[in-house]
Length: 349
Image (cartoon, rainbow, N blue to C red; front, side, top):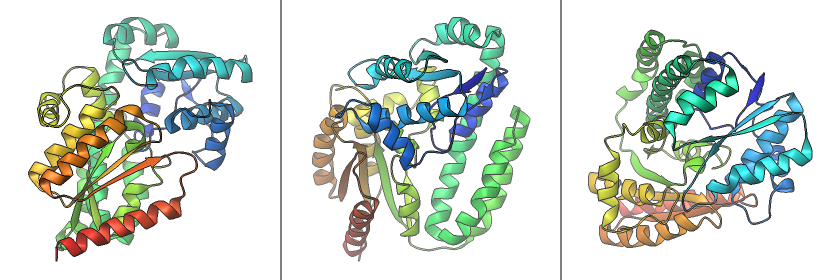
């Protein structure tokens, strides 16, 4: 069995380990490139959102590389993500008949642990539970790494980037909880020397749609580009927190809903409530600006934008909202980021 799933930034490492622990071979195809997006756009409905096109393109490339089993998260509620897997399964059937496509529901843990995953991989529910438990801790390690690299880039971008390949090797070479704990200490030791340098750092909160938040190819490496400008990115969205949400063990969820309530009382779908709640939390704890990223034509995030505008006015905090599609130019994006950071610097004088 050669299994493929969509790339998900740094968290791809944890998802690969999860599939391998279930006894399957991972076959993702080449890393995401312009060709991936071109393939996705070629087979997608014209006005569908960017994450659909990227994930579809990555499936096409995985099939070219020999994948025979495709796994796609299945959404629900008031967002087009709920229809992704129906459309993608239909489109991919017309491209190849030599694969199985499985939609993995995000909102039924019982089915995930005891029915769907055991049936696909031919393993016991106990093994699925253990692999998921390690996935949770592995994704927590990656969440920790992202916090370190964000701060390190803002302090000394060149030195931080030199340490990235070693850090990723540390994250990849874990296979149990003990190794994950040791890896966390190694990451801390690796980046600690950079944190001795004290300097005034601009803090920008990053909020928006989850796939664009997590996948650097989709967001044009926005965190890295801000790091080059001496900005530390503050963000809460990660696979780790998403898993905790799905397993109903994230105690911070209620606070986010409460924080969002003043500006967005009812959920319009997607991650709009989280976008607004996280941004409000950042405003209350002190931040220099907010950047909001979302796919072009994303209805929930467009509604969240209205709430963010009022919030930015109330707290007198600069807000930059960026919608992204396959036509977005990185040069144009960098120009907007540079102007935004310059505005914050002048405001702070």
